[in-house]
Image 1 (cartoon, one colour):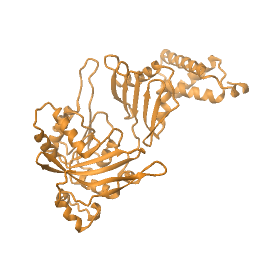
Image 2: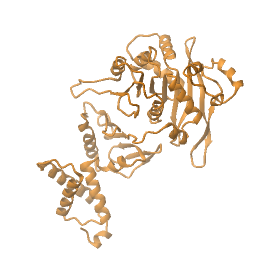
Image 3: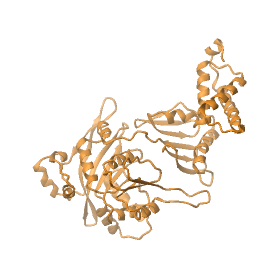
Image 4: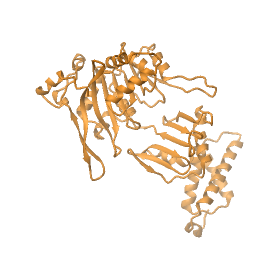
Length: 442
């Protein structure tokens, strides 16, 4: 539908933008006026080709094919970002207004070439995403969290909360569940660390995965959950369902925000309390971020051993402090010492994960919660990642280092029929004496 001359001369972007919008309007009107639903891609493609023919446009083949693909994505998918959603190497998409779209690949941020014609186009994209999901966003409620049908997490914010225009962040749902072997191959942790964590899950220790935003907490929680025996009843509780547990007896619960009338909210805290009435063997909470921390700790401390959860914190000691703060948000006036005693008696292990400067993710610390000494929670670091510099390619250099200490809960592993070799902890008999020196306050 284009001449040789047309194939040699590219059409200016402003003309393509107007033609794209015209084609979307024509196809959308045809779909709306059709007596029968036309959701089939081939049917939509035929309507698009008819509209393009009526436009009498003569575009070079490369521009024509790209334009028709964009229009199809705009009608059937999410427009300009649909190729990014389809790209398995892209893990996160961030739209900062109309003129800046960033993506994350392998932990690194880069700016894409995508540009929206105006802020209204971004607002239309946000509406297209959230309205079918039963969410709303407007000036009175300018932020929204949602989950796409494939499990990807969506956050949108619009003016007046967003000063420079609407923003949209999509954290894509990984179609492939990583295994512990994958994490070993990716150098996220060592085989000895993986063996130790598997033993802790099998021995029903309560484990807290701590890390910053985008550090891989949920991925690591997924990996730890694969060690849970098949015959146990597992309840998962999440804000947005991301966990991919493949055991047979899994019951999934998901929080829900209030509707447009401010009703119907189902909180994580309510779900944790309800889960206790559902005879769980294990409770897996995607993330604690509010007063539900107290309910989770009480569950861990009253017969629900082997529970797992995640929390935003940058170091194991920070994780303890953040847990204290979250428990105080529960509304109960508890003395700080009581809160710390609750934490010390509930959490057995903190697994710290971080995204380093080069984008790679590492388990930077595995730390035992020993108990209380005075008013302080005592920690015992068992494994750490020590940085040693930066390589020629910009990658962070370092190595995983067992501290040589053995955990105070080792008898629990033995009682569960698990005996780990001294080499797992980085030493032989000489290092066994370190197990008695637990007053490090790490």
